[in-house]
Amino acid sequence: MNHKEIERWHRLRNLKRAAQVMVVAAVVLVVSGYAASRFFHDTSGNFEAKSTGGAGMRIEKFSYSSPGAHPWELEALSAAASTSLDKVTLTQPRVVYNGGRGGKIFLTADTGDLDKLSSNVIARGNVTIRYEDFVFAAGDINYCQEKKIAETASPVSLEGVDFRLEGKGLKMSIQDEEIVIEQDVKARLFNVRWAEPNKVPM
Image (tube, rainbow, N blue to C red):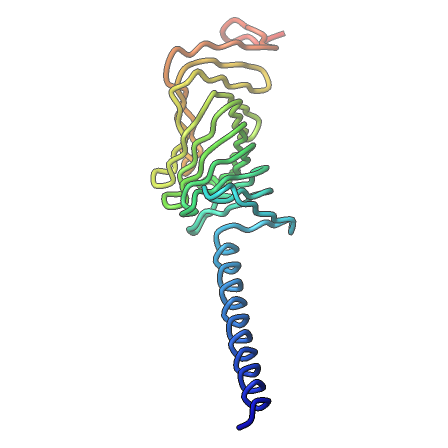
């Protein structure tokens, strides 16, 4: 084997090694992309993930569906995930819960946290809950997936078509679609006509 043949053999061997490295890198990228898509999915098709400097990743237009037979849907303007992808900090989250009696409960807030392992959600700042014709407002609220209950100890208000309630503490059963204001309840009624017993109001 002369010098040129030896040089050609080394060149072919180096090309073969480079090709193997590229194949392995491509497989790793495909597997990593699939794993990320299993956790984060963007229904709008505009998914964009950015590194947060070694402390996880930032996701624009984040969305998440809880596991189970009756999943709830979460969307957020953006989210910052931990390196383990189990804890997610949310910006402007919006959650749609499916009640056990067929109703839908809508929750929005300024910020929040999602625990992927338990599917629990904490919402903070200008928390608003809409259910049928009722609108609830609170400073914060915690949702427990195991109990399917959202609750808070903060001051709350409830507004309907002809009334407003204020109080402290709220407990909402998603399964029963039942909401209770727990303490210091004050009510204001609007457009009410009072009548004596057995008389039709004028």
